[in-house]
Image (tube, rainbow, N blue to C red; front, side):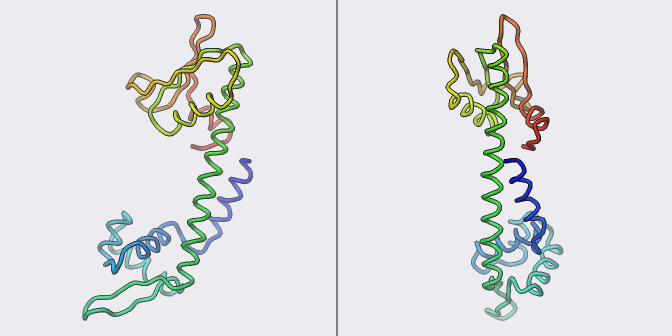
Length: 188
């Protein structure tokens, strides 16, 4: 599964459109008659870089310029630009789905490992997406005798990371999920 995810990243790396170029393509497709200033602001890049990227995209054939009222230009995606936007969007969605799947598989593995070691009480601490995924993994495993609890209250564990607290025989163990996922080869 993780190899498939890496394959998708390699495929994206071989595209002739960079991430910043894709953001500009996306902004042009989503806004009617955007100026370079609006594109730059929405894309989070400088006006000068926006100008360079637009020129590069014109040269590559992804966008074209039309003249509307004097002193005003209109940027339009070409069929090639539309196809590239669709391809990149598809690959981004695929990469996201594969990442979530890999995280879910790894979270299940973490919980199962602790279950095999006798853990029956889990407290999931965190208020972000990773804590939600950990809660879903714990719920979906339906392990006999396991109780899990999710806390979203601000505490020493939720300030910067998502953790699972394992309570076993009055001994507590803390598992930092981001570090544990990294050890398992999944970068969240």
